Image (tube, rainbow over all chains, first blue to last red; front, side, top):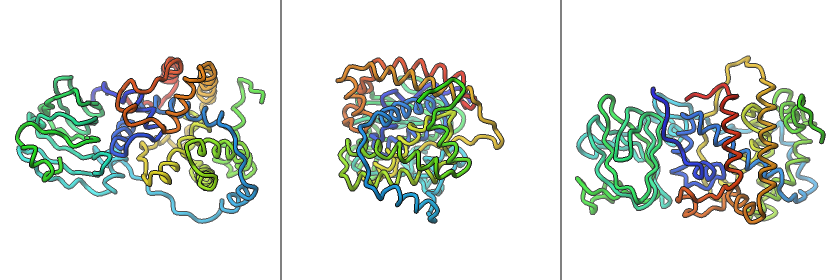
Length: 211
Length: 186
């Protein structure tokens, strides 16, 4: 595996650390960090800034019974949150969004498949499967799009993206990612607005395919 | 608090005692230190007194329950607690679950590397003095950012966060840390 060359931008890591990213983007950032030691260290640095601000926070006294309340609960049974491990090419945060299930692929035509993991007003996150040599339909963005490669690689006007690489595309970028030869390219893609596909699917049909 | 180069910070010592020995006195000390700060921090971002105490309670219980995942090679106690507090806040205020990166699993029996822990603590002191040197209006923006109050627009523009002078400090720290941290995967 070649080294990861495309990382999470600094301000986005800070926003992730602060918890201000919409969930769809947070899934992608958490997945990239799971694969990328460099961004993990950078994220920890941002958490460190957050920690220092917490240290410096203006103190507000807590009610007198709070401490006793908490101490009395230390031995109480509790249900630990489930931890989702990486499964094959899918990092833990993807498995968490899948709730442990396998991807359920839906054909979009020309061998391109997708599985929409979550979708809401604030954005959507999906898995995309693109056969080698096949282009992801030419699309522009209404907003921001994050694409993380989980298997294979793709290339577009801005460069080549291999496993672990993250492409950050804003509305300025009208690009055509093409899966490279070799393994099919599987990506985790998040948008904060519906994609605008120019070719092979008229925009009118987009709501139908939820793309 | 006097800090020498051969001793971990008081908070790190408390946290290790909680993690390794389930030490209730150390936990009570962590509570005394962090609970009023957490409450102030959470109330700044708009939580009511009641909501804030609820979050403080959840966070402190998580500190006890998740202590095993505290790794002083990678995080200061305050940074670790900050991250738990942000999760809890998102959970309560936005009714969302923030996906977290996979945890790194250390090989069992890996011994603590004191120089790395001290290195991180020293780096944090440098970062703190960089933060302390910010002009009040810069400091205000930074606080806003790390309290999760950036607008969507500010996040979308990649230059959105004016990290200013602390940015170079973070960079420098990262460069050093990168050399020290053993378990980088890429």
